[in-house]
Length: 465
Ligand SMILES: Cc1ncc(COP(=O)(O)O)c(C=O)c1O
Image (cartoon, rainbow, N blue to C red):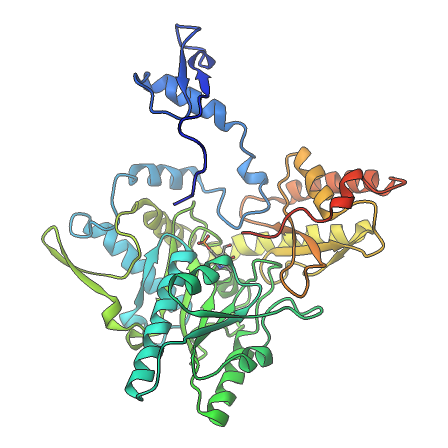
Protein backbone atom coordinates (compact mmCIF):
# COMPACT_ATOMS: atom_id res chain seq x y z
CA UNK A 1 0.00 0.00 0.00
CA UNK A 2 1.60 3.28 -1.00
CA UNK A 3 1.26 5.77 1.77
CA UNK A 4 -0.46 8.75 0.28
CA UNK A 5 -0.05 11.92 2.23
CA UNK A 6 -2.31 14.13 0.14
CA UNK A 7 -5.00 15.85 2.14
CA UNK A 8 -8.40 14.62 1.15
CA UNK A 9 -9.92 17.89 2.24
CA UNK A 10 -7.63 20.05 0.11
CA UNK A 11 -9.70 21.54 -2.65
CA UNK A 12 -8.21 21.20 -6.08
CA UNK A 13 -10.40 20.98 -9.09
CA UNK A 14 -9.79 19.69 -12.53
CA UNK A 15 -11.70 21.20 -15.44
CA UNK A 16 -13.68 18.51 -17.23
CA UNK A 17 -13.55 20.83 -20.22
CA UNK A 18 -9.97 19.56 -20.57
CA UNK A 19 -11.78 16.91 -22.55
CA UNK A 20 -12.45 18.27 -26.03
CA UNK A 21 -15.71 16.30 -26.18
CA UNK A 22 -17.26 17.70 -23.05
CA UNK A 23 -20.18 20.03 -23.74
CA UNK A 24 -19.94 22.21 -20.60
CA UNK A 25 -16.83 24.45 -20.61
CA UNK A 26 -17.38 25.33 -16.93
CA UNK A 27 -17.63 21.80 -15.57
CA UNK A 28 -15.09 20.81 -12.90
CA UNK A 29 -14.43 17.74 -10.79
CA UNK A 30 -12.70 17.73 -7.41
CA UNK A 31 -9.31 16.00 -7.47
CA UNK A 32 -9.24 14.75 -3.89
CA UNK A 33 -12.89 14.03 -3.15
CA UNK A 34 -15.15 11.47 -4.70
CA UNK A 35 -17.17 13.53 -7.20
CA UNK A 36 -20.91 13.72 -6.52
CA UNK A 37 -21.80 12.98 -10.09
CA UNK A 38 -19.60 11.00 -12.43
CA UNK A 39 -19.05 11.56 -16.13
CA UNK A 40 -19.18 9.40 -19.20
CA UNK A 41 -16.39 6.86 -19.60
CA UNK A 42 -14.94 8.48 -22.76
CA UNK A 43 -14.47 11.80 -20.99
CA UNK A 44 -12.95 10.15 -17.92
CA UNK A 45 -10.59 8.18 -20.15
CA UNK A 46 -9.48 11.29 -21.99
CA UNK A 47 -9.05 13.28 -18.80
CA UNK A 48 -6.84 10.63 -17.27
CA UNK A 49 -4.74 9.93 -20.37
CA UNK A 50 -4.16 13.67 -20.76
CA UNK A 51 -2.95 13.96 -17.18
CA UNK A 52 -0.70 10.92 -17.52
CA UNK A 53 1.09 12.53 -20.47
CA UNK A 54 3.12 14.26 -17.77
CA UNK A 55 4.66 10.95 -16.69
CA UNK A 56 8.04 10.06 -18.16
CA UNK A 57 8.24 7.86 -21.24
CA UNK A 58 8.44 4.30 -19.93
CA UNK A 59 10.81 3.12 -22.69
CA UNK A 60 13.25 5.96 -21.93
CA UNK A 61 13.20 5.06 -18.26
CA UNK A 62 16.68 3.64 -17.84
CA UNK A 63 16.24 3.64 -14.06
CA UNK A 64 13.89 0.71 -13.84
CA UNK A 65 14.56 -2.99 -14.10
CA UNK A 66 10.89 -3.58 -14.77
CA UNK A 67 9.52 -4.44 -18.20
CA UNK A 68 8.36 -1.51 -20.30
CA UNK A 69 7.83 -3.28 -23.61
CA UNK A 70 5.90 -6.39 -24.55
CA UNK A 71 4.59 -7.39 -27.97
CA UNK A 72 1.02 -6.29 -28.68
CA UNK A 73 -0.17 -9.91 -28.63
CA UNK A 74 0.99 -10.18 -25.01
CA UNK A 75 -0.74 -6.92 -24.10
CA UNK A 76 -3.92 -8.28 -25.70
CA UNK A 77 -3.65 -11.54 -23.82
CA UNK A 78 -3.20 -9.64 -20.56
CA UNK A 79 -6.24 -7.48 -21.25
CA UNK A 80 -8.22 -10.65 -22.11
CA UNK A 81 -7.31 -12.25 -18.78
CA UNK A 82 -7.38 -9.21 -16.49
CA UNK A 83 -10.72 -10.36 -15.06
CA UNK A 84 -9.32 -13.62 -13.66
CA UNK A 85 -8.36 -13.77 -10.03
CA UNK A 86 -5.23 -15.86 -9.59
CA UNK A 87 -6.50 -17.20 -6.28
CA UNK A 88 -9.68 -18.72 -7.74
CA UNK A 89 -7.87 -21.85 -8.76
CA UNK A 90 -11.01 -23.92 -8.64
CA UNK A 91 -12.80 -21.56 -11.05
CA UNK A 92 -9.84 -20.95 -13.33
CA UNK A 93 -8.06 -24.31 -13.27
CA UNK A 94 -6.22 -23.63 -16.52
CA UNK A 95 -4.74 -20.39 -15.20
CA UNK A 96 -3.60 -22.39 -12.17
CA UNK A 97 -2.18 -25.01 -14.53
CA UNK A 98 -0.17 -22.35 -16.40
CA UNK A 99 1.23 -21.13 -13.07
CA UNK A 100 2.29 -24.62 -12.16
CA UNK A 101 3.92 -25.14 -15.58
CA UNK A 102 5.89 -21.92 -15.06
CA UNK A 103 7.07 -23.17 -11.65
CA UNK A 104 8.23 -26.44 -13.22
CA UNK A 105 9.99 -24.65 -16.07
CA UNK A 106 11.81 -22.33 -13.68
CA UNK A 107 12.80 -25.20 -11.39
CA UNK A 108 14.31 -26.93 -14.37
CA UNK A 109 15.97 -23.75 -15.65
CA UNK A 110 17.58 -23.29 -12.23
CA UNK A 111 18.60 -26.95 -11.98
CA UNK A 112 16.34 -28.07 -9.20
CA UNK A 113 17.26 -31.66 -8.35
CA UNK A 114 13.60 -32.53 -8.08
CA UNK A 115 12.03 -30.78 -11.01
CA UNK A 116 9.36 -33.49 -11.15
CA UNK A 117 7.94 -32.16 -7.87
CA UNK A 118 8.89 -28.55 -8.34
CA UNK A 119 8.17 -26.48 -5.26
CA UNK A 120 7.39 -22.85 -5.74
CA UNK A 121 4.78 -20.23 -6.46
CA UNK A 122 4.12 -17.03 -8.27
CA UNK A 123 4.08 -13.81 -6.29
CA UNK A 124 3.47 -10.14 -6.98
CA UNK A 125 7.21 -9.59 -7.43
CA UNK A 126 10.58 -10.34 -5.90
CA UNK A 127 9.69 -8.47 -2.72
CA UNK A 128 6.88 -10.83 -1.84
CA UNK A 129 9.04 -13.77 -2.94
CA UNK A 130 11.80 -12.54 -0.61
CA UNK A 131 9.35 -12.41 2.30
CA UNK A 132 8.27 -16.00 1.64
CA UNK A 133 11.80 -17.32 1.20
CA UNK A 134 12.97 -15.43 4.29
CA UNK A 135 10.14 -16.92 6.33
CA UNK A 136 11.08 -20.42 5.20
CA UNK A 137 14.67 -19.77 6.35
CA UNK A 138 13.49 -18.45 9.69
CA UNK A 139 11.07 -21.30 10.27
CA UNK A 140 13.69 -23.96 9.46
CA UNK A 141 16.32 -22.35 11.65
CA UNK A 142 13.86 -22.10 14.56
CA UNK A 143 12.87 -25.71 14.19
CA UNK A 144 16.53 -26.82 14.23
CA UNK A 145 17.23 -24.71 17.31
CA UNK A 146 14.16 -25.92 19.16
CA UNK A 147 14.92 -29.54 18.38
CA UNK A 148 18.40 -29.04 19.81
CA UNK A 149 16.92 -27.39 22.91
CA UNK A 150 18.58 -24.06 22.06
CA UNK A 151 17.16 -20.55 22.18
CA UNK A 152 15.53 -19.24 19.04
CA UNK A 153 14.78 -15.65 19.93
CA UNK A 154 17.61 -13.80 18.14
CA UNK A 155 17.66 -14.77 14.47
CA UNK A 156 19.84 -12.84 12.04
CA UNK A 157 20.20 -12.72 8.27
CA UNK A 158 23.55 -12.01 6.61
CA UNK A 159 23.70 -9.99 3.40
CA UNK A 160 25.61 -7.18 1.71
CA UNK A 161 24.73 -3.54 2.39
CA UNK A 162 23.82 -3.43 -1.29
CA UNK A 163 20.66 -5.53 -0.79
CA UNK A 164 17.43 -4.20 -2.16
CA UNK A 165 15.17 -2.65 0.44
CA UNK A 166 12.88 -5.71 0.42
CA UNK A 167 15.40 -7.58 2.60
CA UNK A 168 15.50 -4.82 5.17
CA UNK A 169 11.72 -4.90 5.13
CA UNK A 170 11.75 -8.65 5.66
CA UNK A 171 14.01 -8.26 8.68
CA UNK A 172 11.94 -5.50 10.22
CA UNK A 173 8.57 -7.12 9.63
CA UNK A 174 9.64 -10.60 10.77
CA UNK A 175 11.83 -9.58 13.65
CA UNK A 176 15.15 -10.72 12.26
CA UNK A 177 18.40 -8.84 12.84
CA UNK A 178 19.76 -7.62 9.49
CA UNK A 179 23.52 -8.18 9.34
CA UNK A 180 24.49 -5.86 6.53
CA UNK A 181 28.08 -6.38 5.46
CA UNK A 182 29.38 -2.95 4.40
CA UNK A 183 31.05 -2.19 1.11
CA UNK A 184 34.80 -1.79 1.35
CA UNK A 185 36.96 0.17 -1.09
CA UNK A 186 36.15 -1.09 -4.57
CA UNK A 187 34.20 -4.13 -3.27
CA UNK A 188 30.64 -3.07 -3.91
CA UNK A 189 28.89 -6.29 -2.92
CA UNK A 190 29.08 -9.23 -0.55
CA UNK A 191 32.31 -11.23 -0.49
CA UNK A 192 32.65 -14.83 0.70
CA UNK A 193 34.99 -14.16 3.63
CA UNK A 194 32.94 -11.23 4.86
CA UNK A 195 29.73 -13.29 4.69
CA UNK A 196 31.22 -16.10 6.74
CA UNK A 197 32.67 -13.71 9.29
CA UNK A 198 29.19 -12.31 9.95
CA UNK A 199 27.57 -15.73 10.57
CA UNK A 200 26.93 -17.37 13.91
CA UNK A 201 24.58 -19.98 15.36
CA UNK A 202 21.66 -17.54 15.04
CA UNK A 203 22.10 -16.96 11.31
CA UNK A 204 19.02 -18.16 9.45
CA UNK A 205 20.74 -17.78 6.08
CA UNK A 206 22.94 -15.74 3.77
CA UNK A 207 21.35 -13.81 0.91
CA UNK A 208 23.52 -13.69 -2.20
CA UNK A 209 22.40 -11.40 -4.99
CA UNK A 210 22.63 -12.36 -8.62
CA UNK A 211 22.64 -8.89 -10.02
CA UNK A 212 23.17 -6.14 -7.48
CA UNK A 213 20.68 -3.32 -7.74
CA UNK A 214 23.47 -0.80 -7.27
CA UNK A 215 25.74 -1.74 -10.15
CA UNK A 216 24.43 -4.91 -11.87
CA UNK A 217 27.32 -7.07 -10.63
CA UNK A 218 26.84 -10.71 -9.62
CA UNK A 219 27.77 -11.69 -6.09
CA UNK A 220 30.04 -14.76 -5.99
CA UNK A 221 27.36 -17.28 -5.01
CA UNK A 222 29.55 -20.37 -5.48
CA UNK A 223 32.41 -18.85 -3.48
CA UNK A 224 30.04 -17.82 -0.69
CA UNK A 225 28.59 -21.34 -0.58
CA UNK A 226 32.06 -22.93 -0.56
CA UNK A 227 33.14 -20.66 2.30
CA UNK A 228 30.00 -21.69 4.20
CA UNK A 229 30.86 -25.36 3.53
CA UNK A 230 34.19 -24.73 5.25
CA UNK A 231 32.40 -22.98 8.11
CA UNK A 232 30.29 -26.08 8.56
CA UNK A 233 33.24 -28.42 8.62
CA UNK A 234 35.23 -26.15 10.95
CA UNK A 235 32.54 -25.02 13.38
CA UNK A 236 29.52 -27.20 12.66
CA UNK A 237 27.34 -24.24 11.56
CA UNK A 238 25.08 -25.19 8.67
CA UNK A 239 23.97 -21.90 7.09
CA UNK A 240 21.74 -22.09 3.99
CA UNK A 241 21.97 -19.69 1.05
CA UNK A 242 19.08 -17.90 -0.59
CA UNK A 243 19.81 -16.36 -3.99
CA UNK A 244 18.07 -13.12 -4.76
CA UNK A 245 18.08 -13.50 -8.53
CA UNK A 246 15.47 -10.78 -9.04
CA UNK A 247 17.15 -9.84 -12.30
CA UNK A 248 19.88 -12.42 -12.83
CA UNK A 249 17.52 -15.41 -12.65
CA UNK A 250 16.37 -14.60 -16.17
CA UNK A 251 19.75 -13.48 -17.50
CA UNK A 252 22.43 -15.90 -16.27
CA UNK A 253 20.75 -19.11 -17.55
CA UNK A 254 20.83 -17.69 -21.08
CA UNK A 255 24.04 -15.67 -21.17
CA UNK A 256 26.27 -17.38 -18.62
CA UNK A 257 24.94 -20.97 -18.61
CA UNK A 258 28.22 -22.28 -17.19
CA UNK A 259 28.07 -20.00 -14.17
CA UNK A 260 27.00 -22.04 -11.14
CA UNK A 261 24.78 -19.92 -8.93
CA UNK A 262 21.57 -21.95 -8.65
CA UNK A 263 20.44 -25.33 -7.30
CA UNK A 264 23.55 -26.94 -8.79
CA UNK A 265 25.08 -25.66 -5.54
CA UNK A 266 23.70 -27.89 -2.77
CA UNK A 267 23.73 -25.07 -0.20
CA UNK A 268 21.32 -22.96 -2.27
CA UNK A 269 17.92 -23.63 -0.74
CA UNK A 270 15.73 -21.09 -2.49
CA UNK A 271 15.74 -18.55 -5.29
CA UNK A 272 13.55 -15.58 -6.11
CA UNK A 273 13.24 -13.75 -9.40
CA UNK A 274 11.03 -11.04 -10.84
CA UNK A 275 8.99 -12.19 -13.82
CA UNK A 276 8.43 -8.50 -14.45
CA UNK A 277 12.14 -7.72 -14.82
CA UNK A 278 14.18 -9.83 -17.24
CA UNK A 279 11.32 -12.36 -17.22
CA UNK A 280 9.92 -9.74 -19.64
CA UNK A 281 6.37 -9.38 -18.24
CA UNK A 282 4.70 -6.06 -17.39
CA UNK A 283 4.70 -5.27 -13.61
CA UNK A 284 3.05 -7.63 -11.18
CA UNK A 285 4.74 -11.03 -11.18
CA UNK A 286 7.59 -12.69 -9.31
CA UNK A 287 8.63 -16.24 -8.47
CA UNK A 288 9.86 -18.07 -5.39
CA UNK A 289 11.31 -21.54 -5.95
CA UNK A 290 12.64 -23.92 -3.30
CA UNK A 291 15.28 -26.54 -3.86
CA UNK A 292 12.88 -29.31 -2.88
CA UNK A 293 9.94 -29.92 -0.60
CA UNK A 294 12.10 -30.22 2.47
CA UNK A 295 13.29 -26.63 2.00
CA UNK A 296 9.77 -25.28 2.51
CA UNK A 297 8.32 -25.97 5.97
CA UNK A 298 4.86 -27.40 5.59
CA UNK A 299 3.35 -25.34 8.38
CA UNK A 300 3.85 -22.19 6.29
CA UNK A 301 1.41 -23.57 3.77
CA UNK A 302 -2.26 -22.91 4.28
CA UNK A 303 -4.70 -25.40 2.91
CA UNK A 304 -7.67 -23.24 2.21
CA UNK A 305 -11.03 -24.73 1.54
CA UNK A 306 -12.22 -22.26 -1.00
CA UNK A 307 -15.19 -22.28 -3.33
CA UNK A 308 -15.38 -26.05 -3.26
CA UNK A 309 -11.69 -26.84 -3.68
CA UNK A 310 -8.80 -27.63 -1.37
CA UNK A 311 -6.08 -25.17 -2.21
CA UNK A 312 -2.56 -25.13 -0.73
CA UNK A 313 -1.28 -21.54 -0.71
CA UNK A 314 1.84 -19.76 0.41
CA UNK A 315 1.39 -16.05 -0.21
CA UNK A 316 1.11 -12.79 1.64
CA UNK A 317 -1.92 -11.66 -0.28
CA UNK A 318 -5.01 -13.39 -1.50
CA UNK A 319 -6.56 -11.88 -4.63
CA UNK A 320 -4.40 -10.71 -7.52
CA UNK A 321 -4.66 -10.71 -11.28
CA UNK A 322 -4.04 -13.91 -13.21
CA UNK A 323 -2.99 -11.99 -16.31
CA UNK A 324 0.67 -11.57 -15.31
CA UNK A 325 1.11 -15.30 -14.83
CA UNK A 326 -0.59 -15.94 -18.17
CA UNK A 327 1.79 -13.41 -19.75
CA UNK A 328 4.79 -15.16 -18.17
CA UNK A 329 3.68 -18.42 -19.69
CA UNK A 330 3.16 -16.64 -23.02
CA UNK A 331 6.78 -15.45 -22.92
CA UNK A 332 8.04 -18.90 -22.03
CA UNK A 333 6.33 -20.62 -24.92
CA UNK A 334 6.64 -17.86 -27.49
CA UNK A 335 10.30 -17.07 -26.84
CA UNK A 336 11.63 -20.38 -25.60
CA UNK A 337 15.29 -20.65 -24.64
CA UNK A 338 16.37 -19.35 -28.03
CA UNK A 339 14.18 -16.25 -27.77
CA UNK A 340 15.24 -15.40 -24.22
CA UNK A 341 18.88 -15.88 -25.21
CA UNK A 342 18.39 -13.54 -28.19
CA UNK A 343 16.71 -10.84 -26.11
CA UNK A 344 19.32 -11.03 -23.31
CA UNK A 345 22.21 -11.07 -25.79
CA UNK A 346 20.85 -7.97 -27.47
CA UNK A 347 20.44 -6.19 -24.12
CA UNK A 348 24.02 -7.13 -23.28
CA UNK A 349 25.39 -5.88 -26.58
CA UNK A 350 23.54 -2.58 -26.16
CA UNK A 351 24.79 -2.23 -22.55
CA UNK A 352 28.37 -2.83 -23.68
CA UNK A 353 27.94 -0.33 -26.52
CA UNK A 354 26.75 2.36 -24.10
CA UNK A 355 29.31 1.65 -21.37
CA UNK A 356 32.16 1.72 -23.90
CA UNK A 357 30.83 5.04 -25.23
CA UNK A 358 30.56 6.49 -21.72
CA UNK A 359 34.13 5.45 -20.90
CA UNK A 360 35.37 7.23 -24.04
CA UNK A 361 33.80 10.55 -23.07
CA UNK A 362 36.57 11.31 -20.59
CA UNK A 363 35.18 12.54 -17.27
CA UNK A 364 33.53 9.23 -16.32
CA UNK A 365 34.84 6.02 -14.82
CA UNK A 366 32.94 2.75 -15.07
CA UNK A 367 32.25 0.75 -11.91
CA UNK A 368 30.76 -2.05 -14.00
CA UNK A 369 30.45 -2.56 -17.77
CA UNK A 370 27.14 -4.37 -18.11
CA UNK A 371 28.78 -7.72 -18.84
CA UNK A 372 26.93 -9.55 -16.03
CA UNK A 373 23.47 -8.01 -15.89
CA UNK A 374 23.05 -5.64 -18.83
CA UNK A 375 23.25 -2.89 -16.22
CA UNK A 376 26.17 -0.66 -15.35
CA UNK A 377 27.08 2.13 -12.99
CA UNK A 378 29.52 4.95 -13.59
CA UNK A 379 30.92 7.81 -11.54
CA UNK A 380 32.64 11.08 -12.33
CA UNK A 381 36.41 11.18 -12.01
CA UNK A 382 37.58 12.72 -8.77
CA UNK A 383 39.02 15.79 -10.49
CA UNK A 384 35.55 16.82 -11.73
CA UNK A 385 34.37 19.45 -9.26
CA UNK A 386 32.19 21.85 -11.26
CA UNK A 387 29.24 19.50 -11.59
CA UNK A 388 27.99 16.22 -10.15
CA UNK A 389 26.30 13.04 -11.34
CA UNK A 390 23.05 14.62 -10.09
CA UNK A 391 23.51 17.44 -12.59
CA UNK A 392 24.18 14.94 -15.37
CA UNK A 393 21.00 13.07 -14.40
CA UNK A 394 19.02 16.34 -14.45
CA UNK A 395 20.38 17.36 -17.85
CA UNK A 396 19.59 13.93 -19.30
CA UNK A 397 16.08 14.20 -17.94
CA UNK A 398 15.59 17.39 -19.90
CA UNK A 399 16.23 15.32 -23.03
CA UNK A 400 13.70 12.69 -21.93
CA UNK A 401 16.16 10.09 -20.59
CA UNK A 402 15.56 8.91 -17.03
CA UNK A 403 18.96 7.91 -15.63
CA UNK A 404 19.10 7.89 -11.82
CA UNK A 405 21.98 9.29 -9.82
CA UNK A 406 22.42 8.08 -6.25
CA UNK A 407 24.90 7.78 -3.42
CA UNK A 408 26.28 4.40 -2.33
CA UNK A 409 25.49 3.08 1.18
CA UNK A 410 27.46 3.08 4.42
CA UNK A 411 31.23 3.07 4.05
CA UNK A 412 31.07 4.38 0.47
CA UNK A 413 28.65 7.27 0.91
CA UNK A 414 31.37 9.37 -0.68
CA UNK A 415 30.64 7.67 -3.99
CA UNK A 416 27.75 8.87 -6.16
CA UNK A 417 27.00 7.20 -9.44
CA UNK A 418 24.69 7.08 -12.42
CA UNK A 419 23.17 3.75 -13.39
CA UNK A 420 21.83 2.57 -16.72
CA UNK A 421 19.56 -0.47 -16.97
CA UNK A 422 19.29 -1.84 -20.50
CA UNK A 423 16.11 -3.82 -21.10
CA UNK A 424 14.33 -5.45 -24.02
CA UNK A 425 13.16 -2.68 -26.32
CA UNK A 426 16.35 -0.60 -26.05
CA UNK A 427 17.92 -0.68 -29.50
CA UNK A 428 21.41 0.12 -30.77
CA UNK A 429 19.93 3.24 -32.43
CA UNK A 430 18.47 4.45 -29.15
CA UNK A 431 21.82 3.74 -27.48
CA UNK A 432 23.60 5.88 -30.08
CA UNK A 433 21.13 8.72 -29.47
CA UNK A 434 21.62 8.48 -25.71
CA UNK A 435 25.40 8.66 -26.18
CA UNK A 436 25.04 11.69 -28.47
CA UNK A 437 22.95 13.47 -25.85
CA UNK A 438 25.31 12.51 -23.05
CA UNK A 439 28.28 13.74 -25.08
CA UNK A 440 26.59 17.08 -25.80
CA UNK A 441 25.65 17.76 -22.20
CA UNK A 442 29.01 16.56 -20.89
CA UNK A 443 30.79 18.98 -23.25
CA UNK A 444 28.54 21.74 -21.96
CA UNK A 445 29.26 20.87 -18.33
CA UNK A 446 32.98 20.50 -18.99
CA UNK A 447 33.06 24.03 -20.41
CA UNK A 448 31.89 25.56 -17.11
CA UNK A 449 34.51 27.82 -15.58
CA UNK A 450 33.20 27.39 -12.03
CA UNK A 451 30.96 25.06 -10.00
CA UNK A 452 27.22 25.03 -10.69
CA UNK A 453 25.59 27.10 -7.90
CA UNK A 454 23.73 24.33 -6.09
CA UNK A 455 26.88 22.18 -5.77
CA UNK A 456 27.39 23.63 -2.31
CA UNK A 457 24.39 21.62 -1.12
CA UNK A 458 26.13 18.33 -1.93
CA UNK A 459 24.46 15.12 -3.09
CA UNK A 460 20.70 15.40 -3.16
CA UNK A 461 19.43 11.90 -2.85
CA UNK A 462 20.21 8.44 -1.61
CA UNK A 463 19.13 5.33 -3.44
CA UNK A 464 15.69 4.14 -2.45
CA UNK A 465 14.89 1.62 -5.18
C1 LIG B 1 18.16 -7.51 -6.27
C2 LIG B 1 16.72 -7.12 -6.12
N1 LIG B 1 15.94 -7.79 -5.24
C3 LIG B 1 14.63 -7.50 -5.06
C4 LIG B 1 14.05 -6.48 -5.77
C5 LIG B 1 12.57 -6.18 -5.57
O1 LIG B 1 11.91 -6.62 -6.72
P1 LIG B 1 10.36 -6.39 -7.03
O2 LIG B 1 10.28 -5.02 -7.60
O3 LIG B 1 10.07 -7.46 -8.04
O4 LIG B 1 9.59 -6.56 -5.78
C6 LIG B 1 14.81 -5.74 -6.70
C7 LIG B 1 14.22 -4.63 -7.45
O5 LIG B 1 14.88 -3.87 -8.11
C8 LIG B 1 16.17 -6.08 -6.88
O6 LIG B 1 16.95 -5.42 -7.76
